[in-house]
Amino acid sequence: MKYIVTSPSEREITVDAKNSTQAKRIACKAWGIRTSDKWCGMSALRARRVKDEDNVKTLAVCLIAATSAIQE
Image (cartoon, rainbow, N blue to C red):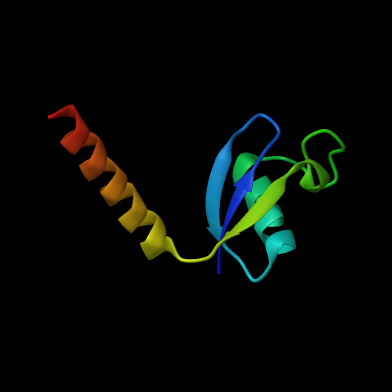
């Protein structure tokens, strides 16, 4: 499953993981952060599962088309 992991400083990374805990560990490793760090480690991160990536892309394309139609 895909997860979007967000840090308190609003950095984001998308990772493939079994669960949110593993996603946070992968993000810490990618960013060079210790998982046990109290301020920016795993406890400070937020991981959200991406349910269907195709729907997100389709929505983005529809929004772009609607915006361009309104401007014309």
